[in-house]
Amino acid sequence: MRRPNRRGRRPSITFWRRLVQVLCFAFFVYGGWLAAVALSGRATGASAAEAESAIPRESLVWTHGSLPVIDAYPPSAVCRFTAKGKAISGCIIALLSESLTMASSAQVVLPYLLVFMLLSLLLGRWWCGWVCPLSALGDLASAVRRWLGRDFLHFTVGWRRNLRGAAYGLLGATLVISWLIRPERYRSTWQCWFFLPFCQICPARLACPLAAASPPTTWGAFGHPIQGMFTVAGWAVLGLFGTAFVTARRLWCHVCPIGLVTSWFNRGSPLELVKEPTRCNRCGTCADACPMGLTHVRDEKGHTVLNNAECILCLRCLELCPRDDCLALKFARVPLIKSRFEVAGRPQPPAAEEHKERSE
Image (cartoon, rainbow, N blue to C red; front, side, top):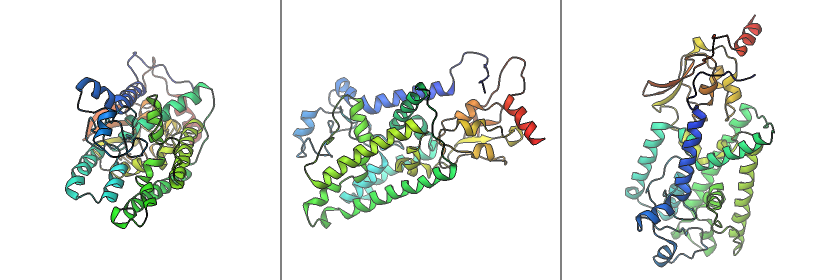
């Protein structure tokens, strides 16, 4: 079905989302280096970081900047292993994993957790759809697929929902391993190679340095069998990540443990996707447009908030909905934007006519 010509030339929701993604990606990948240049001291250079640390440069835990530009752990896959210096301290999984291994006190960890929880509660998984650098890279891979004229593979809602179990598995394994390798439990030196287990296989650890035209930390490290195992696993996961976005739509987002933790706050967030059921004809445009493969926006028949745990609030459903005021984005019950179908003459959308014929 051809998309209708909408009145005016105002930028679309997708345009603003792409702009936010580009700006956030640039900050997360290059922000530490830019701060080091502009502020000369907020984020230190490689030589200073090496001078104040006994950690060798080839180690997983070594980073080019000793201090982040922003000392926080936002609800997004922001990587601490950037090539030119850290813009952000890291992701929530890195915080939990390192805290369990180092037995960090609640006084140290709690402020970071509270900031993470507050940001997650305010905006839910909007962070995944608009801010996450891995999401931006994945959308770029999807754009390549569309440019090649290839259709994506279709997976059922149930199949995608089962992937959430893999996210719980990754999260659980990361936390258990991180707790087991605490220094007081060391029986041999091989245990230290399990430090930050999820970080060692996360696509961001390889993708973010590559985006900055710099070799990833330990990108080809095979000095120890366990280190070699994580190196192979990291590149394999990066390949799966790229394949998932090129061949399908956002399969990785169902597996990502960072998105999983953020999704716990999706329901109850003041940022809400709301549906007016009396205006919906269940044409299915929203289900076809959803990059997460969700159908609950189409299927919901009650006047309700649609903040599904898997919804990343990309607003593609709202942007393409052919029914005026059927969908709306609200913050604290205040409407921010509503669905609009504006064409000359206001004809009934073809999808609505087809639905009417099927109903009869």
